[in-house]
Length: 224
Length: 395
Image 1 (cartoon, rainbow over the protein chains, first blue to last red):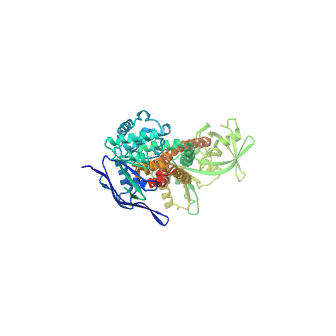
Image 2: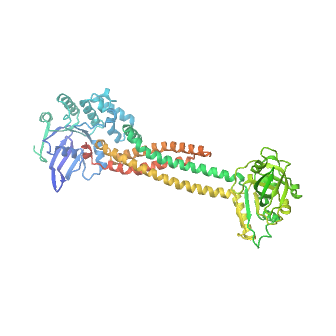
Image 3: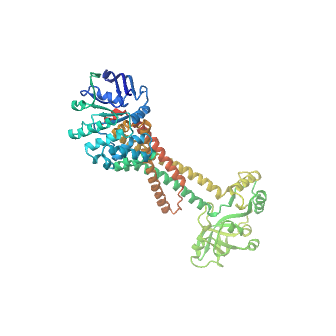
């Protein structure tokens, strides 16, 4: 039997804007199993980013339960949520979100730093991750010395370095040209083949179609 | 984690050098002022002690304030009574005082005339430039001999050797008396009680029989025993005098006591000034808080990224507090250098000896750490409470 790594149970996320509620997510239930390659698709404003933030424990639901790797995140405080983000989730963002003053190596080391791993072990693991994304020779470069594709590879290395349960990518090719975007997509596919659970948020139909499973969101509910 | 935070703090400072330098300036000036004031306070009190103690710390002087009840008590025999009644006294030397104009070589100079015993010079640590003290037998035999203070000898004789020369005392009554110079004192730093340089000294017995025919001694100079604490001996003398003659008939004075008092005064004063300087440190602290708030605002995105990577609120808080403390500690160390330099410059100009106390350094480091934690706390809390999504989307 395959293991369920993400379980959403009637999750709602409302924002109070002025005097009325915006229903960003309005009752979403979903299971994602270990090793799946899932695309969350939908137009902008559909609620896909909200869903990603909830799965990534950057945000908490207004109601409903979210289980990450079997753990219910409801009622967790900031420190506990930070722990889940550190151990279970690897983020890849559209705008890379690298720490600008740090080298590629130190960027990749950062999640391990927060996990309390010793410097020597940190460096070893970070170098391993950089090697996996093909950037070992650039490890002492700073983000501003790297191309967009290289930056995203560093971000991916950073996301996989602590061997998280899920890899969460929010429009990871959105800021790249189509050729580089394709290479990054291939990298994600390779990582998935190694057994990693990948969730891919995109509004690009072609990229979405390359994922084995697609979830379409519109107006805060799952369409199909 | 701690070292990582220090590295982060240093790289943040490096990336905005000018801003860091300016906000450090407040701390440097504040800490510098505190260090300078504490050290200058110490140097000043050392200097004051030195000048008070010039006459010797083992001396207690008792000035008589005779009234009807006590005018018969304060005679030369009473010196022996004091010595026998109080422990820890080496010698009690009676001293008479008057004033006169001294004349020689057609020049004249106003002077204090002291009638005292031979041992007085030794007790007051007075040294001779020329000649020597009058002898004990000259005192017993009422000889008309005089030891001149350096200023008087200089004024009347200039380069000429005064030993063996005669000087005339012109008393207030108009009577003129002739004395032979036997010694000239070396110049002595002005003491709190006495101006030795402008005094002339004659044997005690000569004073009471030939110069003024008085019996009431104007002061007793008590030299305390080496093994006793001067202040406690002085207290015991006071107790004895209070019961025997009453506390309205004398004043006592000891350099040791004045030194203690003066030290207390300078300590209080420098503490007060340091507290005022501390206010500038407070102002510096506000500067630190300001730069830290700016730094947090500027690095909102970075904070968001760190949170997404699993930094807990306490880690973020730690990062910014360490940054603030690193900042203030650097300011503190520069302040110590700055304050030490000011202390050095001032003591050099004033001619004091510089005493740099490690206490002031500890105070400075402690204060700058406190300022860092205190004023770094609020910005650090602000950073740790940022919402991860809002922080990530911050442009």
